Length: 108
Image 1 (spheres, one colour):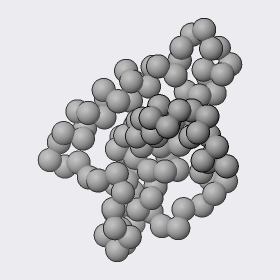
Image 2 (image 1 turned 45 degrees about the vertical axis):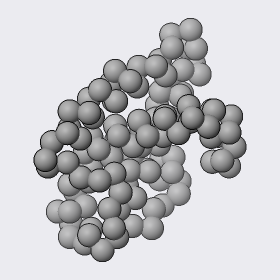
Image 3 (image 1 turned 90 degrees about the vertical axis):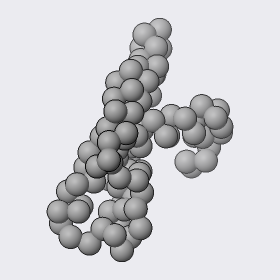
């Protein structure tokens, strides 16, 4: 999922691609400068931001049924804060729950 290294089967799982890309930005920066605790900024930059977007009536699920995404306009609509920020937030939550080591091992 990193930089389109693995291609998704269909657009309904776009959140995996964009969520991983957004989450790994924080991991890379945190690895370069661990004393800055950049990884913790995801809460301010992504989690809080996407709460407001996800509360709107116009929000959509993180992942949709494949048959619900058929037209180019529907695909374009997926490139939003839900796919990027909520995707990254869910991955961070999963990593914290499993522990980073177990999460990383699961990706291999």
